[in-house]
Picture 1 (cartoon, rainbow, N blue to C red):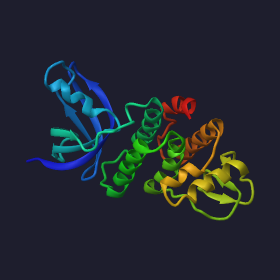
Picture 2 (picture 1 turned 120 degrees about the horizontal axis):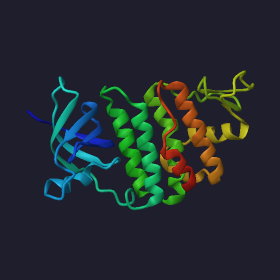
Picture 3 (picture 1 turned 90 degrees about the horizontal axis):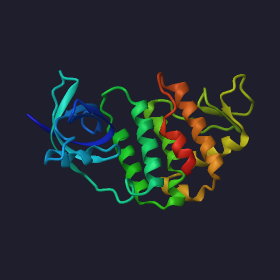
Picture 4 (picture 1 turned 120 degrees about the vertical axis):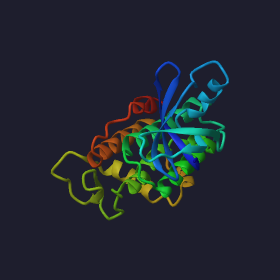
Length: 240
């Protein structure tokens, strides 16, 4: 018996000569791994390979056998074809970074519809927004995503953002994991954004934006066991 769900592809790895294993965040079953045979060929089955690119949002018909770690997909189709993700190097770099952050942060298969919808909304917005606005999407995503992961940033008073405590302070902490006043003010601007569309009003240099992303990756490393800096960060910092 199959079940229908929507899913976002996080990672695809080659398996054997013609198959792939796909890590998918689904709305119904949380994080799942699927084995798909015969798609790395030039035949009819091979035409499905392009569906499983990281970032793709899919309508899935799956065999959800809870006793198996590797499940199977009966059918898959694009929910919404992207216009700029996969087409624009700049937008693709941001989307790739976001997906890698999610892949590194989520390890359990627990269902979380709100998290799924937030990721889907972010990708759809990124696909349609201007390059000027999209430059800030990665920072906004990391700040908001932390809430879904259980270490929400406190919007309290203070001019120094403490990465360990996840809140602002008026005094320098005894450790080195904090942002200076200028960097902390940038974080506050993003936290005060009522909606992702507000991002176009936040003006940052590429150098400062890259620095903030590096510090936020450190923030994730502190709060998520096993989290490491995404490989795509170096590429992204050259783009933003």
